Length: 76
Image (cartoon, rainbow, N blue to C red; front, side, top):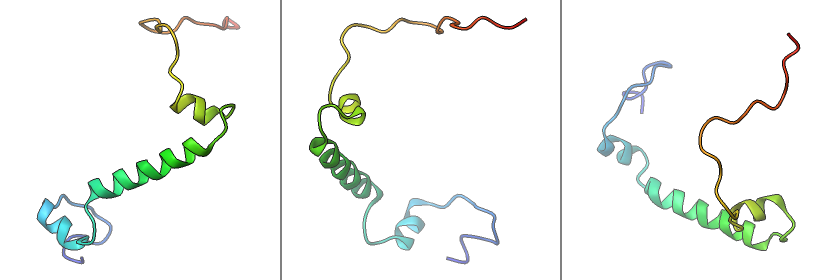
């Protein structure tokens, strides 16, 4: 690993070198397993929790396009 990191400077490496450093699992497998673990947590939450409603419940209607309008008046 010392040939990849020189001091504290990072440099790009090829996929083969990355897989040689971390041969146990692929990054895609890690992401999928963590996503499934998070889905399990959300599924066990109550329906009144904000996280549950943000992930499971889809908002009705459409959101407005463009930049949001200013809601506060400036003090100038």
